[in-house]
Length: 196
Image 1 (spheres, helix red, strand yellow):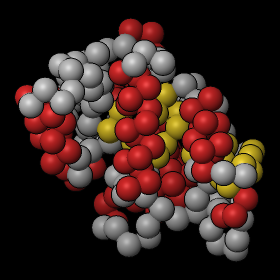
Image 2: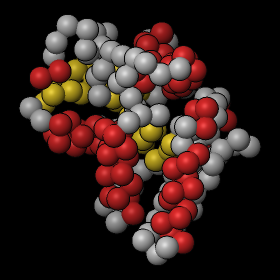
Image 3: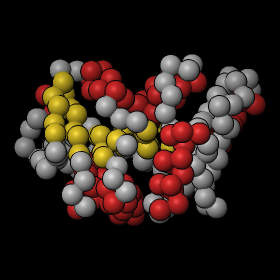
Image 4: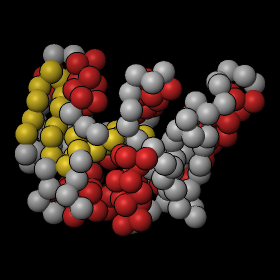
């Protein structure tokens, strides 16, 4: 399975975010999963790529050509696709992957997440979508999502996302199982939102 990872490109986060995302990449590759990502050399994108790379896993980078500058893109990808626009990049990230993991990130990451979440809620997209809740990063978002349902802005059951606090074999078994059953992915430290 190829897993798309969204996340911050910033190199200014606490080290735990990079360490956990690199660990996630290693665990993915050890289980035969490939990485599809935005091609960045820094931040969460770079951490995921380094993790997969350390286990000789498959890495597909996809980025607009205007990012092709020294130090911006991860240089050791198995394959790299250049696009003309950000929209084209997002389309290919979706088309070339089977599941999505959203690591901590800013407005770009949220925008990518909400687009695939919307498509899934409209039954235009059928894939597991997981929030990787490193260090409680998505805790406040979980409260916000639940609040939207209470106020009637979102239908009950619209959100099918799960967060967890570690990248361990249990998570990957659940992610693989989700591919067939659409079950939730969670552990004892996870935040769980309503299932579609």
